[in-house]
Image 1 (cartoon, one colour):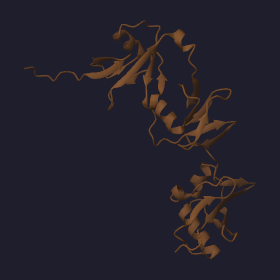
Image 2 (cartoon, rainbow, N blue to C red):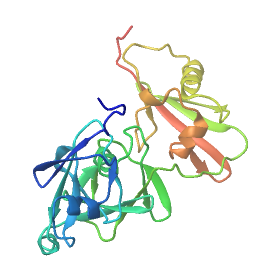
Image 3 (tube, rainbow, N blue to C red):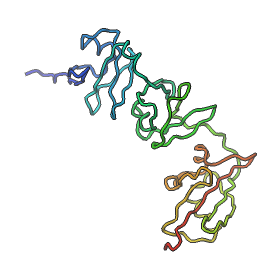
Image 4 (tube, one colour):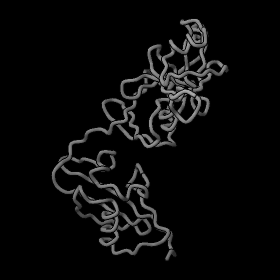
Length: 250
């Protein structure tokens, strides 16, 4: 019996046919050689939910994942009749067959971790994109995205906060440091409004955005500034939030 364990074999599928290899990484050139295909053919990595990602000939794919990687190839002439929509994440350009996709779709196509934040770049500005928002790739130009949060200059001093209790339209203003969490800001708002918390209360940023604060309570005002939810007015930082209540709650 051999003293050495055999090399691990990795399974993969090319155009519906299964192959095995001891190489943990392969390029499209190697894949086409393995399947005895014309080197002019274009290789796509098949992704979940019917998406595909076009691979450059020198791009390396790691086969050491939990799933069997599947690839399909197409003649370049076929691609002229197939509409693909391009978008860019950081420095890399990708393609989608769907004209409208979500941030979750982009993470799959770009092979990003599900927790990676995504920001849409436009006109020198950057904004966070939610997983449920549908993004239109049919617009002129290539849609650009970044996984890096925009660098926002932090202004010295406190944040001018305005809290509104929507059931009676009462509003109170107060100051909070940038290091304060949103939970601390909300608690201070209840205190200033002289209102008790009710079970049915919901929290939103002030109009017109009306962004839910439920999942943001652990963040600081400084972190919300990066997300564009703390605004700059002249030399003053401002943050507005509403408390919506269901009357009759405990």
